[in-house]
Image 1 (cartoon, rainbow, N blue to C red):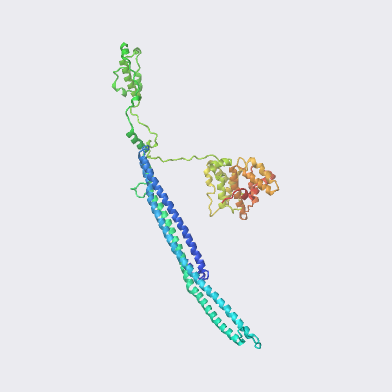
Image 2: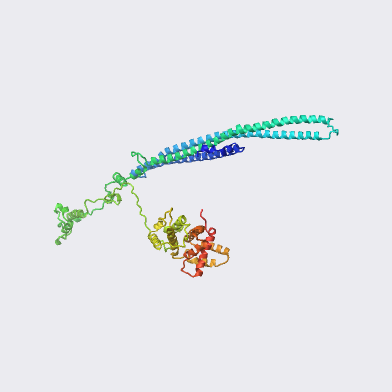
Length: 603
């Protein structure tokens, strides 16, 4: 049904023609105007914030680019060039942001102008309506007074006519009864005419209100309300459109659709660190030797050299020139001096030996040595160029979940200090199994439960397998029983009770008391002292059990039934005596009863 047809219904017409129509429409129009004012304030404030944001962004970008370009301490390579291009995007975004800010300011001006115009129109209609109503009310009051006067005169005339005619009666002006009667009759006639005139006047004014003024004013007010509401709706749509446009323009600037323009990602990926280092070394590297690092050569003093006998050189200077082509091992072996050549060396023999040693070094040291880079991009078959993509491999936990203390499990497989497996089981049951009869009392398929337990122990992220096969439109009881059994197994397999060995006996002794107030206070104290993991896990479980019990009409599981099942699970000391089982159940039942007092409830 369209809006126009809705407002044309008879019940709406009756409301608009009623005496309260103007007040109702005036209040409704006032609400629209107030809403428009708040909307306009929001638009104005957002425009100011965005204007300041983009202005500061542009200013900071310009300063950052100038600082990078003007500093001699920074490297001048492709990274610096690409960084400059990327920072330049902040200046480009200013263009998109300024258009957005301008549009918001236009919206604010349009809303403010419309609100002012409609407010003035509302005031005129209200004042005119109040004026007409006041005229009608005044005429009604005047007619009522005329009526009272007319009635009083008629009563006086009636009294005078019914008085005893034999009794002579004189007025203060010495008028006879007949004269008084004539005077009263004239007054009655005049009062009657005045009464009729004022009644006619008030009816005429009321008819004018009903037939002319009220329908006109109601129509005007209704149109003003619709005009204001539609205008706000249009401005809201404009606001949404401008926000989308801002995001799209920003996205196109950062990642252009045109292939001819570079995106921010492609600019960053085009950096070649190895080429940058190569260019720097070529430009600034110096192959000239530092004379201060040249070692001192040993030279025998001439006076000493003359006294030395000249012997054979240590090595034969006539060695083949193609010595480098000979095998290194055989060449070195051939350089062994003969037994009879061990003589003091002369200058010439020393120089010859030095030269020959150089030949040996040439044999030992590779002649065509190349630098092996550790950069993975230099490896054979690598197509990496510029910044390398980081491939982080997640370490997979193999630590089991079942049979491990809650405090240890929440370190690697917990959220909000509650094990993930517990969270998951509770969520699945509360989503699909709250109405399943015998939940937690009926056991699930042992093989299915065991396979699920083993999977979670092998990889804790397999907790997501819990309930993943459940069809929300066709929930099978057996699937829910398996999830419930898995949750019970988790608590039963804990190395120590959830309520801890330290406080286990204190919980049992507390519920032996007959004083309910003492039990509540003591349990609150004991629960508060539990470790964080045990505390928050117990909180999640108890709140869950209360939710299950709240559906006992469908699932047939009362708080007492649940306590009987869960007592041995969270107080698992392997004791099966009836008395111990009774106290364990009493602990769970009491915790469920005072859960909202000892635990902080979910918001």
